[in-house]
Length: 142
Image (cartoon, rainbow, N blue to C red; front, side, top):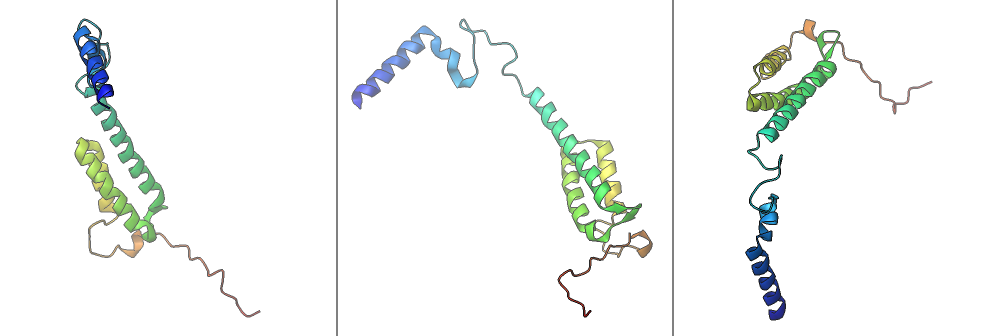
């Protein structure tokens, strides 16, 4: 064990003294002589743009899904209202984090339309008729 420790320490000293260790330091490749490889490293500006784009896309998908599922014929589907409000709460957190004014407005408008966070009942004229499924296991007398 002492022999392998000595061998690895010797190898590290040799690599360090030759400057080869800089090539693998901290996982960021460097060119021998101190230069960096083009396009690698950097301040994260590109990653921030990618994640903001992903968050914007996620918020738009939520808004689209809520629009398709929570409304039927321009009226609110009561059985989907809570689900839609939960989804819009997530979308609201996303758009607040990325500070997109147009998406904030869309989310808040949808939340108002769906009566999210309002304790008053939704007026009956705004509700879409629910399709009632019969109990398929129920046996009727024939």
